[in-house]
Length: 424
Ligand code: AMP
Ligand code: GLY
Image 1: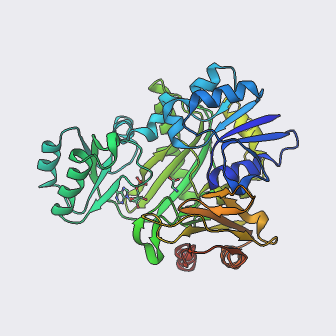
Image 2 (image 1 turned 135 degrees about the vertical axis):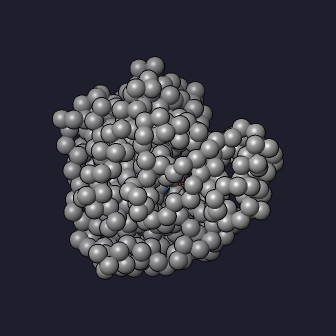
């Protein structure tokens, strides 16, 4: 089989490595992929958002199955375009991807179907929003409606900060069109859990839970990033919590999407907060998380391609989705200065011992074949071990076998999870 994977980050590298475990997979094309995954896939320099070029490439190269991993092409309708061209695809349609593409849509969906989430109001006009935040409880959470690379959320501690956030989003176009509508919502507190779930629109099979570390610096200080590291499973996500989430959140969401004529097939990401009033949805994503995929997929014991095809074909109910009882830790090595400003172009060397554990993200190959840094999150290192403390230790010692100038990483990935285990 020939498979095409749209995207070029660490998440896509994790998907590709897992797909390669299936012996019927002869070739994987990554569009555009990245320099560090060249041993695992044929990287083709077509942008993930160039949908017509992706379609033309798939048809020309007689691709059998496509996986669309990032949010942008999904929200733009990549799966519809490829499916209409006769190519079966993993991922939601454009109509279903709106669950991530519009926060106003997802909040209205949760309200309509009584799915637990923060109280909110949505606004299209700046004046009305400004008026509302003069009396809204503080802190207050302001979210751009559309996609904003995970940066469109501002937690305002004061009215002044709330005003500034609204003005920058709605008047100054900080997130472009994404910020022309906003959601202002209640501030929630509690441990956060990421749950990725396979679904064919009827059945939902959650993957092992995980914990992201979104802030740039140790002890959750600094700016929000795409994610600086992950561990799986998440100790806060007990069996009782999982059961409650299935009943009150996962199944109701899948059924709500179908009732709206937007059947969701693919991987649905539930960003949850475990509040004292029960689990609530912080956000939905219409795709695998990055770097959640880098800890969850290595723990998958079932064949990924088979499970993905079952989501596409509507046969997930009878398809086994099994996870190992091991623990995983992914440590992101970033460029110093990420997520603001950073230098690129430094040579990366990875000692042989570490190579199998590296998921490459912001990397490219120089014309003479050297691997260079080319982005903020450069690569992730995932260790899988029988217990979390050993997995964390292993990820950090593998880091010493990966070298590039200006490397930056957090020192405390997994520490919050260890604390939760100790207190349990
Ligand atoms: P999001 O991009 O929606 O995942 O939001 C980024 C981060 O902001 C989340 O991981 C939370 O830590 C935080 N956040 C978002 N919404 C809320 C909320 N209603 N209350 C408290 N924190 C929030
Ligand atoms: N790691 C969070 C995300 O993928 O959105």
